[in-house]
Length: 387
Image 1: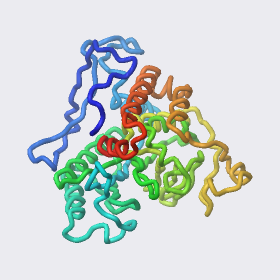
Image 2: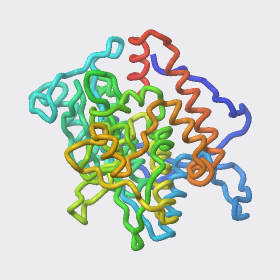
Image 3: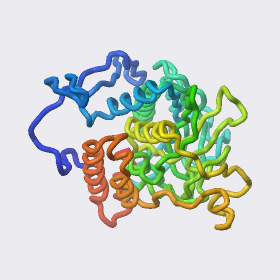
Image 4: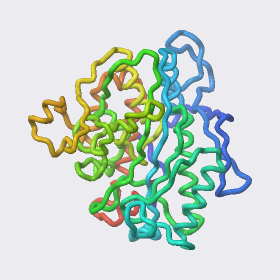
């Protein structure tokens, strides 16, 4: 099934053309297809033009990789660097027309990897392929939902980390296909179990650390980009919850402080990203908003939500005491509205043109995913075959 092949979003014209210039530093082996490699690149203008600083440039403001590179450079120039590692959750399906998982198991249980089974063969080949591509594989294990697994890759600078995530996904997709299976990163396909995410672990390295906060409700328009993403936006399903807060080792907070007692491995886990998001844009928005908070010395007024109760289970009085006063965007429409009205992200971090074009493409994509109308079975098939 999949998406309709040719749909033009509003605001895009049939005239004009960009170059796609390979970035040879990104070459990696494709272990699922011996003798082939993959690489990434940049969208560039064919003819140099005067940029904002009146210097000639060929950069395209709509290029996701170039946008992330710009954000990283701005931060680095101010003495702030980042490392990012990803946890990629996915579900292996043996059927997509009637969605059926390849296995049923408990979380991290041994019965998720029966000896000699197709599941064990696929996962081992995925693990070997990731490592053969030069990407650090820290762990792979069974997750909670039927047929759900997770691979955890090591930290890299943001741009390299996003490249590695895309390459890892391609290894997962193509290795599963070799065995007649479909790997899907769809946000949530079983409403009686947990969804799939792409948690980002971000460590911030700065000589001049200052407290900061992020524009979480607007960021989800990019990190949770399709209507189906908001099936994960719920309390009590280990998805980060619906309240804007952070907490030490709290998986029901959208931002979890991980390994807090270890200076060498302390990092922030960003839990409101799923596998439908463009990782370059997601990281650009998250790091850009975070850097603005550091640069402008914005005080973090929300206190650590690390007790035995999650924000959703607290009394209103207790939430107020911790500074937890707002909710995340609970719907796709709300997230889009908040992004459109967020001056920092729209005018500074992403830029007005990229934000406008992103929202146009985002709306067109949602319309394409909704072509099946009220036929829930067909809609689910379209989702898992598209992602």
